[in-house]
Amino acid sequence: MNFISTRGKVAPIGFIDMFLMGLGEDGGLIVPETIPAVDAEQLESWAKLSFQDLMFEVFSLYTNGEIPDADLKRLIQDSYAGFTSPDVLPLTTLNDSLHVLELFHGPTFAFKDVALQFMGNLYAYVAKQRNEIINILGATSGDTGASAISSVSGKEGIRICILHPNGKVSRVQELQMTTVQDDNVLNLAVNGNFDDCQGIIKELFADLPFKSKYHLRAINSINFVRILAQSVYYFYAYLQLPANIRAGGVNFSIPTGNFGNIFSGYLAKRMGVPIKQLVLATNENNILERFINEGVYKPEGFRMTHSPSMDIQVASNFERYLYYFLGEDSAAVTARMEQFKAEGQLTFSPEEVARIQQDLSAYGVSNDECLSTIRSYQDRYGYLLDPHSACGIAAYESAGQQEDGPFVSLATAHPAKFDEAIRLLGIEQRFPERIQELFDKPQRQVVVDNAKAEIAKQLESFFV
Ligand SMILES: Cc1ncc(COP(=O)(O)O)c(C=O)c1O
Ligand SMILES: N[C@@H](CCOP(=O)(O)O)C(=O)O
Image 1 (cartoon, rainbow, N blue to C red):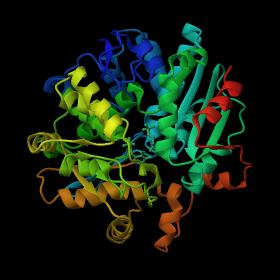
Image 2: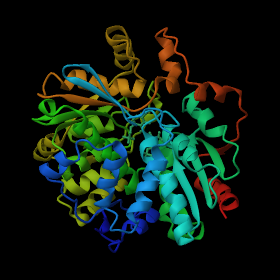
Image 3: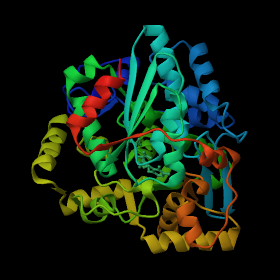
Image 4: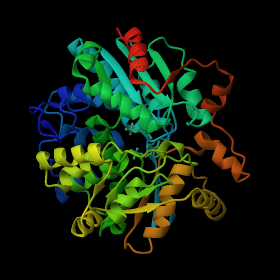
């Protein structure tokens, strides 16, 4: 198994080199040279595996034996030891057609912990095995940053700098990132939005002399390891359902921002998980909904919503989907991405839109609908959704009318992280202790302008 770039200009590399490269050195995104297939018999043989054992099986298809089995197993076990649910990711059945996969039982109460707890341990492992300097640079709309910091804070040989949009993350997200006192952590609060933060780190990763000089490593979903780790929960959710319920295939409803969460589902489907429809849920920042429903990929005015982690316009993993949509033709991907850079938009023909809609369907959720969904599920089921998970449920409510078969809706965060929205409904929630205690801690962060040069300067003095 080797890895290549969507732009076709990275010579095939192995698993650990791919992990360290993060963003492709030609500016593209890394994908496997071929997607390994899991047949129905093999899949069924995994039905009784724990999440950890399933992750070992899926990763073994990609790691080329570069990590000895015993080490990979230990890394996986260590990564989920801090999750509070014995199932790691419990599947809760709300009604005959709807199952909620709770991805928020990790240390920072968001689905990002599923991949990032593992990636933090993997970075520490690679740092030791290969004597590599690991300087992590990431951008966050709130959850990736908190999760990545928690996965490496205090770890020897690793430094991490996270850019978040100043004042545009929830209070709990900000505290989760900025109350960490370890000296290997730097939080930059950027006067801009998430797209600005992501744009800057992509430019810094694309500056190869800078990247090499400061040993920059990625924890965002530009790193294929994030995508792969997230694909495991699609296998797991499918196999958790009783065989008679999942017999004809399963639909997934997926809160989406940077397209990583749903692209992981697309990968799982390509590997062999019998997924019928992947329903993409956005908030009012609905560029991806417009791409799927109208064939226009064009950022429009940035909006602040009740689901701030999905306040994203330019979706990183769109390029990975484009690569498969265009028949793995890297020249065609490069041409379209260059067109997007030059013209600020891409349009797709009606025939192309029809093909896109065979892979994905989409539903954009307004702020009001997000809140009314939280209210309605609290009243009907006594189940408190966070605003991101509520977008997924609202999309299920819409798509569930058209699609046969069971739905798994991904619950991507704990409601305590987004109390600002929950309070608007007059609902009082009890915070988990780990969140409550954040309010008494001092914060450390540096406010910076949305300017690459100023941010690069901060990095130069922080990274060794
Ligand atoms: C809580 C939550 N839900 C959903 C998403 C969407 O995931 P993705 O960006 O991978 O599409 C994010 C981040 O964007 C998130 O933090
Ligand atoms: N929602 C994310 C945005 C970054 O996306 P990523 O999946 O590429 O890390 C966040 O919470 O930071």
